[in-house]
Length: 191
Image 1 (cartoon, one colour):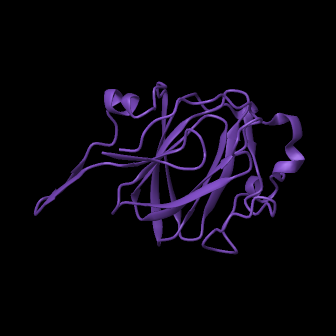
Image 2: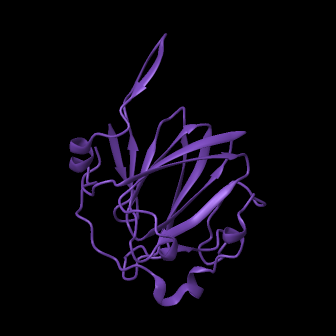
């Protein structure tokens, strides 16, 4: 397994070993001890699955309070996945990171608690899995407008399919005091 850090503290890109032969493939998608050693020490309490058609954009979502850390991956098709640091006091506040996750590359991203997350589907359809460190809470659910000009996210599409909720999310500047606090994460080496 290869772990890469990015410019947002706590965000990890995980590239698991893929064992492939004429029968198919095998990938270990989670191993508590190895992931803890990599810097993901929180316990996961809920798994979610979604399937979406090409052009669907889900996000940018977060919870406050009861922030969720998420370990995400595509198991069918491909998505462009985005993490935005919205933690008050973070050295990378307002920065975003995006990467393609696909059933072919089996890449994962760990989204630390307090960051907003979203993805858009770039294949005919995609199935998406995510493990969460806290339970979903409807009353704590929040969102940021996917096209917030202040963030400048370079999505691979300009007219996505959106839920009504995601069409009407506020910008980051409009959210104000409803943002999660930054809690420094221990430094780790890429490996």
